[in-house]
Length: 156
Image (cartoon, rainbow, N blue to C red):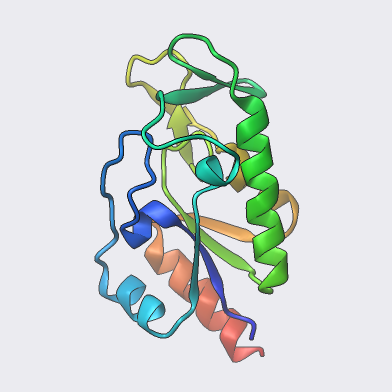
């Protein structure tokens, strides 16, 4: 069924964030979509082989590095590919991903200095999904996501 939504697993309440924290989304629309079975969760970072907890990472150009300078680009790209495969298997055309993440950020990411500064940009997974025609939104863009979902489900 068209209308499935790929979602960052941390927004579903899964403790997969780098700090093992909880950032579950409690918006009534999001909860309704979950209840209707529309949400398909994935943590690209964990799917790419990174542990929980793990060192904080940020994008520096085309690379992703930890605060100590360890290059984890391979794991991020691997996780992004797994997210894309899952999206294709489930005929996903919309994703709602965790804003600011070096993997899932859709509008903003941290600037790579590890000083808490954000910049316009997107994470590795968000970028790959968009290049493959999937509309990507952050958890702070549920109004836009809802409009897109309604458009898709009314056309199927």
